[in-house]
Length: 103
Ligand SMILES: [Zn+2]
Image (tube, rainbow, N blue to C red):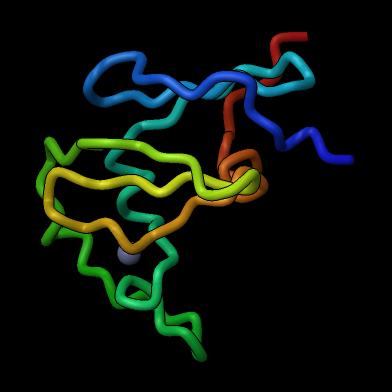
């Protein structure tokens, strides 16, 4: 079906989230960047796609407090700034990964 199926989701360190994928790829994300690209209705306008979130309002040291699976398709992250309405689908996470391929 899709390569966007994680086999492991883990915190590499406080600022870094790691995901291992079913096809063997490994991704790492800066957690603040993930927070800034939240696509929930309070961060991005539902109809216009305009970003409503003010990056400057997000603490430099924002970090996930908890990460839970949402069905089989994504993650819901509870953030240290209190935000928890964003769902990060695995497909989106996969697309966000800009880590160059090793091979
Ligand atoms: Zn949001």
